[in-house]
Image 1 (tube, helix red, strand yellow):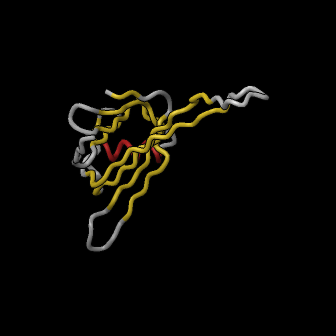
Image 2 (cartoon, helix red, strand yellow):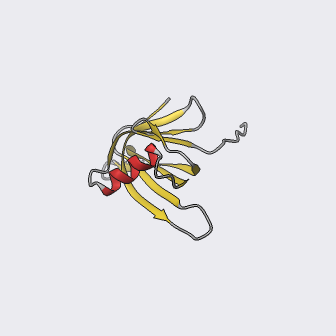
Image 3 (tube, helix red, strand yellow):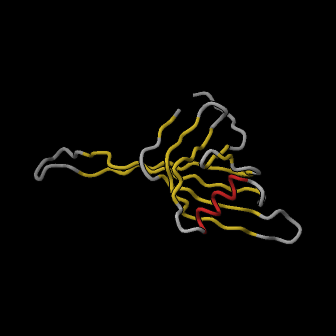
Length: 128
């Protein structure tokens, strides 16, 4: 298998790129449901859910539309995003609807303020 080195992942929410991103990650998980018949010695499993979770860390910029979209969704009560995407490069990305499940702003003397956020999938996501 060939190795591919990526630059920092690009994340967009509601069409706005999250700027000043210092790190971004995508966690994909799947859960199975045991549908083995009673008395059957051969286990049977069925895939029931796939979950995608984006983790973002960025140097905080109060003028950045993507960062403000995340903060406003989290603070404003409706944390639902109709469109979010995690890019592995300029043309390949995974996207769908999501919910902002965490958002924090960390301030430190002598260094950049940091915005961290987590977005979890809500519905079907697709890979393009």
